[in-house]
Image 1: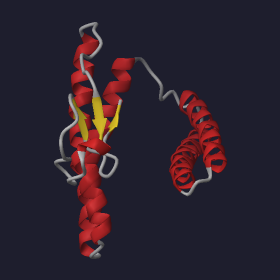
Image 2: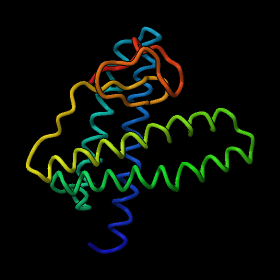
Image 3: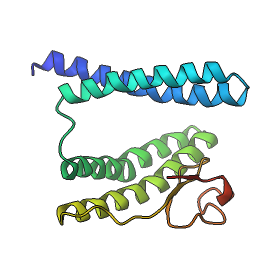
Image 4: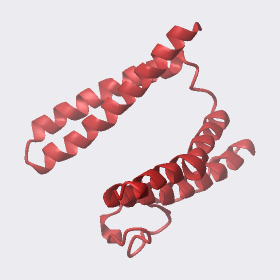
Length: 167
C-alpha cells in the first residue's frame, strides 16, 4: 500500500473508531434522559461507524489470527502502562488537572490487568486451547477488570460491586 493511502486509512480508522465510541457514550446519556429512540439511533449509527473502522482495519492488514491479535493487544496495553499514561499523568499533574489525573489513574490500573489477561489468553491459544476464564466484571466508574465473582467494592475507585457489568 502506498504511504499516502496508508496514512489516510489510519486517520480514517482513528476517526471512525472515535465516532463509534462517542456515539455509544451519547446513547447512554440519551437513555438516562429518557430518550430511548435517540439512544437507539446513536447505537445504530455507532455500529455503522464500527463497520467503517473494521473495513479500514482490514485494508490496513491490522486483523490477523488470534495469537497475533493477542500480541497486538499486549503491545498496546503495555505501551499504555509503561509510556502513554505515565506521560499523560505527568502533563496533567504539571497543569494541576485533578480530574484528568483521576481518569488517567483509573485507566492505567485497568490496563495493567488487561495486559496480563491478554498474556494468559495468548499462552492458552498457543497451546491450542481457549482461555479458562469464567465470569468477567468491569467497574462502570473506572474500568477495573475482575475475573471471578464480583468484588464487594472496586479496589481502584471504591464503587459497589453490585454496579459492575458482567461479561
